[in-house]
Length: 307
Image (cartoon, helix red, strand yellow):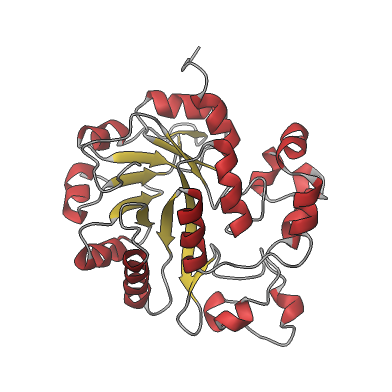
């Protein structure tokens, strides 16, 4: 078992991290997606946590419930579709799976961006007819964090919990997550990350045993000092940037060597291209966060080559 709070002893192998679960092959941020991660030799799955109206920890990426649930059909008279305006009981009625099947019925260019890259071969190999039936059944739900951590315990997987900023109650969110992780005895199996770095400061004020990761889409100048100040165990940069001269997308290698030389993990998001994965690994990335963990597995099982 990799101890996430021991960056001075980084894992010998590259981490295969399933983004929102193996979301190319199951409805994202659901127990079904997290279970899928096992099939691809993932050590971790990444997920997002928010607070419901009544202060319960719910796994969901978006502020709005409209993209990945049937909230408009279940609550046609509600003016708001923000997750924090719904109680856990209300959220527990939502269908969080049928939308995924509906996406697959569309021509690839009309699907959500990450699903446009899903090949027919991958679909046949990794999404069975029974899977599709289950996802379309109306029985897939938004899980609670407790349910998600219980699944991780059963499967032996570790969890990267992304803390999402709240319109209010950030301290409540952090305190509740830390309390639950401790209560479930998972302090060495959880990595807490956030784009809102004040949440990481709040985490470290409550615990020095749970690992934290600085999520960023931008270059962080003075990276070494910044990570030290936050006492962060990992650096999670966007794997892509923009070439200032051409304005075209390019791979982002900024900070990888610097953070690794400090003994910190560097897990890059969100990479779905095998050639890009190889280059990021060659540059020193310790982990790849991907919607397609099967592709990460394929890259890691073959000799590294940039030719």
